[in-house]
Length: 277
Image 1 (cartoon, rainbow, N blue to C red):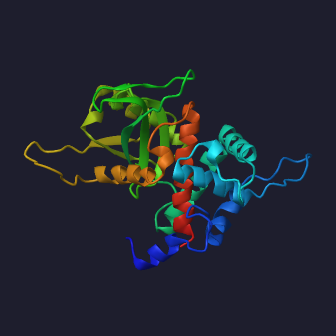
Image 2: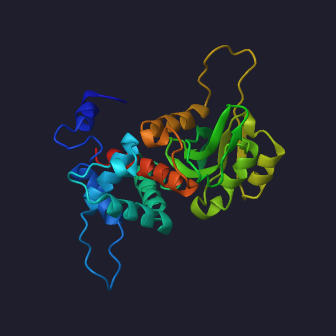
Image 3: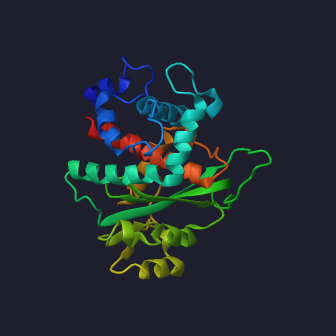
């Protein structure tokens, strides 16, 4: 719930930018940042300022070359850190750790046993001559771009984000989300979904995961206007959280892996802010 106490926390009047991490947030994140590789020169980059620069870019949606020079490390240094962490899977690893920590703070088991699945199509921006795959047309939403397929826990915290073509229907994309899901979430038992997942393709994907069952939350035919449906609203709220970041309001990335890394960063920002309260 948004309170006056939260309002004071997020005003951050003492910070250079509202996206800058507080001391409490950095305390949560710093131990998860990989150390410099052994045998080379000592790390000279201020990692806190580098992460602040990446969060500034995520929040404002500005291009890399528009990153402010005052206070942040050089743009090329910040970009290299972002890309190296992306390629090494560091952003995902950090989020997995924070996800468990945050669930425990909220009084939940570290590993979720129930989840909600849904997707949202994201319109792709013009990318010149470099159109690198995974784009398609979502005939239902009339959107050309990529689809963000999300699996979230009952608190709305992302468990897995998969990026694929917007032309892939939800019933087919569910297989990508559930692929090897037991490796990360061994106790997942129940999956809630809307009627778009009521298909044999989804049943087949669920059947491959031992002890997992799916429950379709349907909208009654006699409902008029907006109706808050059980469980389904949770994942919609998660997409709203992501929408606070202008970098995620549209697909600006040539590579789907880059877009996925920004979703992981948005999740990390949510976690460290809550853990630092």
